[in-house]
Length: 255
Ligand SMILES: Cc1cc2nc3c(=O)[nH]c(=O)nc-3n(C[C@H](O)[C@H](O)[C@H](O)COP(=O)(O)OP(=O)(O)OC[C@H]3O[C@@H](n4cnc5c(N)ncnc54)[C@H](O)[C@@H]3O)c2cc1C
Ligand code: FES
Figure 1: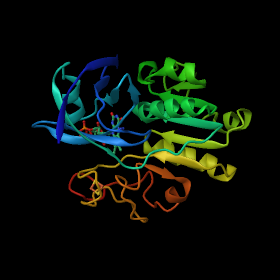
Figure 2: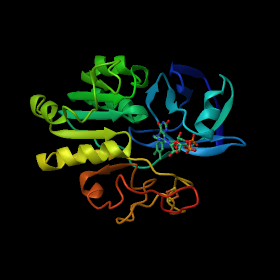
Figure 3: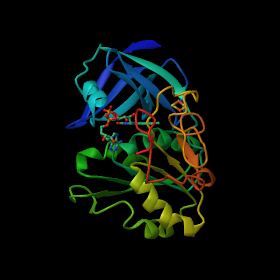
């Protein structure tokens, strides 16, 4: 485990921050790093961007680990292991659907699609406006639709409300989604009948991050999300019987 000083911190809003570290390993959109806070824990985080030879990790405060990250200062050192996992494949005429902090890995995907010269449209939703991180970056990169639960940005409602119309009107040929699992369930329900290929960037409680411990295995495919994922294709997602229903807690128990 190598430790890195935090070079820069950006606060998106209450309890949502980005941390920047020197980039000394290659990373592709959808891959993740394990972040170690000494004496606290180690947890996986998507890289949200590669900018000026720095990698950016964006975190929303939920529990003990992410809340500890919120009190870190520039110069504090955190361990980084990675990059791990399989990321996104790149396709033209795509729709990027992001929910809440799940928007993070879509930002680096947008960077890679832009570099390829591919067209893409964004559909981003969150509880409130400030949780739609990188809103202006997405708007600069492509046409962007917003939804919020309280109507503070874009349309009041969920990203799935106008999904079918957006796919038809924007002539979408490929879909990427990242966000809460309940969003995947609804998105899948809508897009499966449309026969459009897709990839979801999923999350599970992870320990080793390198395929040894079995903590992140998905029923009934046996896919280890840390190795074969976290980005899974439509064919792999079709084999998952626990989507939106169960996951393993820290002890490995199904909850
Ligand atoms: C591949 C991968 C990439 C990830 N990328 C990111 C990222 O870019 N940014 C980020 O903030 N987190 C990301 N996570 C989640 C992160 O690893 C931690 O699980 C998260 O920060 C919460 O950890 P904690 O110890 O603070 O809270 P926990 O004690 O683990 O959680 C506290 C409570 O919040 C709930 N919770 C935790 N995470 C979420 C969530 N995302 N949505 C809704 N409820 C949640 C838990 O179920 C629990 O009830 C990623 C996870 C994986 C597997
Ligand atoms: S976290 Fe250990 S196998 Fe995936």
